[in-house]
Length: 459
Image (tube, rainbow, N blue to C red):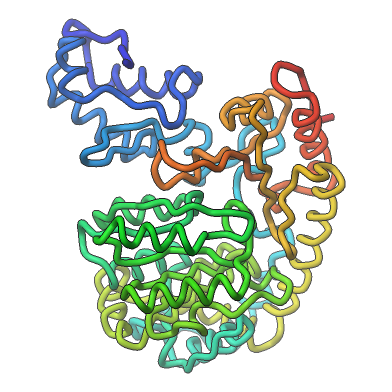
């Protein structure tokens, strides 16, 4: 039981408890998945009012330090340094920072020429109010981009969003109600947890294997959790494991969704890095699939522009959700994106980033050998499945001591105490150059070869 050195005589008890909890997590004395005492039990043990304890747990949850679920209790979510990175507070000083799934920002298109062209053409009208789903010209450009993803939609069937995270939130809010559940891979995109928490949705992890989500496990989950309304999945170069679901598996999952009335939110932001990916769920089951694409990883992350193709029956409802949350996407980044799509800048940037991602995958394959999961394309990440000699927390800590910052599986678990997969994700696109990447990967490979308790260095 966590027993902080705080009692009824301690001044500013809330601040003292928060500081104690942060330090316990930072130091590793509390680890991801560790259960915290019930609020009333801790209150009685240290003599601090239960209302103060409740406020500490609430604020710690808001910071991402702990996760609380009704009926299950409160658990440590992930290490403080991992949360800080995920929240965008900037890289650690010193180590080669491979925590974030960055989209090779050094290859982003130059912004100056685009802004000068807009200024020459007269762009004052880009500061006026626009339609909720985006201007027609911008949606037509989005339709061109979705065709590149293998998804045929008219401009009227596509909505512009403020990035993929916003598209995820809009999709979930349109096809669920509070108290229902979201099924997802047992390791998944961390932003899903925040969206589900905001909407009052339960998360249910579903087992994976080397080909992604297991259809049999999904079917068992559907029968066991009747309140499940939607499947969130990243089927192509999955985050974090980099698996890609084969076509036969997608067809089985689509058939299950159709039979059980399950919605699918398909986060396919890595699709354009894959080599000849299978058909998307938006093709296999368009009437029940929310398809999400974005320019973030493949062109430019700073535009914060996403393309959402919802089921036809949900289009008007998603428009209302856009109205309720942001009114409309800013037309300025949408105009820049549309110009880059139409003049070939976006496609050229994609080619350059695919080539660089492939080069970085080759460096990872050479350094890590059989430890690296084969991504099946020009993935921006690499996933290492850990053997029984390592815990993921232990490996992350050892890597940090060796000069490499990674994220372990705890950062990707929908629930802190469930799931069998153990490993670490390396963001290959985060390193500044090939030299820094090779240095970090060599140190990681050294750790894997030597095992726990032996020093490794990123030299």
